[in-house]
Length: 157
Image (cartoon, rainbow, N blue to C red; front, side, top):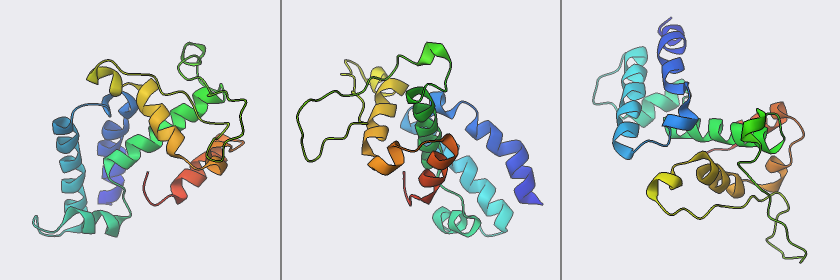
């Protein structure tokens, strides 16, 4: 019952546009994580000094940073496969290389050079960083459904 209330009322507020606000500073990010931790303790009916990681694992919830990375990667996949709106299609560019290196992946994207800390929190920078860390078989998924399922199998994003 309480899980349904959390999923219906609190989680949509935490997930809404988290690709954008997920790039906020550490202070705001920690405050949002505290909200999720409090909700988990309330649902499980445990004391407030119970470690939040134990309670989240009991509910099979991931920390908000993992949810933000999942949503960022999903949007990056949509952009790279051109499933996103047209105005987003030029955010990422693939690395082109004519040489055959061992660690080179054809599906890596160019990481823009940030001149400010603000640029480091942008989708074009953060999405490229996270995307390039993915395994090639995940990057080369044919559909969004397959891509999301492969991401869900990862222990940590």
